[in-house]
Length: 339
Image 1 (cartoon, rainbow, N blue to C red):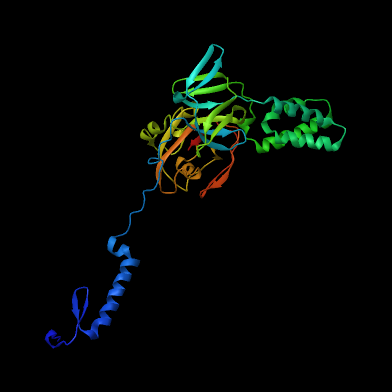
Image 2 (cartoon, rainbow, N blue to C red):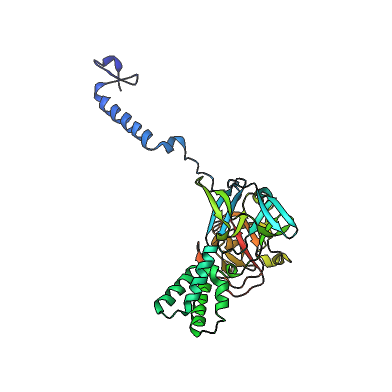
């Protein structure tokens, strides 16, 4: 037993009197203790909480004027419109539709004067005497995609066999790369609000918008197929999301209401049949579609927002996020996922 009265010399560590022969041991123990405190704070402070996962229900609401633009080349880009209203010329007069009331815009087919000139010149060269010129004309028309589609349909009725052959080859290549709905000639701009649909012609050739990086851009109407307004119904749709019915065929008459937006609370699943990519058949499993479209992960619950599109001629199959969708032909009901 230690007897402090017999110590002839002591050392002090942190206010403790320690005999010399134990000083190195105490120093080593203190050093080890400090190392533990520095390297393993979780032992003393507890495991840090993980940030809550983002779901469709907790995501940040889009700002006013936030839109998702579907371009004619098949890409989708998000912007924030800087316009306050859209001027629309109709047979009954000019309308000024406030941005805050618009849910969706479907743009008329527009071909700029320059593109129209290129189409005419290329079609005229399909029957040129020089092979190289004919080849260049075919390549030019393929690059113009849907902009020259209507004119090519007319040129396929020509009497010159070479023009007919080349026009049909170009039409085939365009059909292979351009979605069917983009090949349809759209005569009017259509503006959808909560209670109305207005048909006419938007006066402007461009719309002022801001990119996510805050750069201002002019969106050309000739380059856009449709525009979805993200901020109008988001909060209301999420709050009123209905339970997953399995698929849309379980809801009577819903597929006969193109343009109608719906929200469903779903739990992502890797099982269930899915037909289509981006545009899905009405009998596709909503739980599997939500995973395929990247809205939720398998087992995660969130809100799947979609818009009814009505009949669709073809559906493409693909594999995304562990879900494989199948290709299909014409089906009477379809929908598109809103992100």
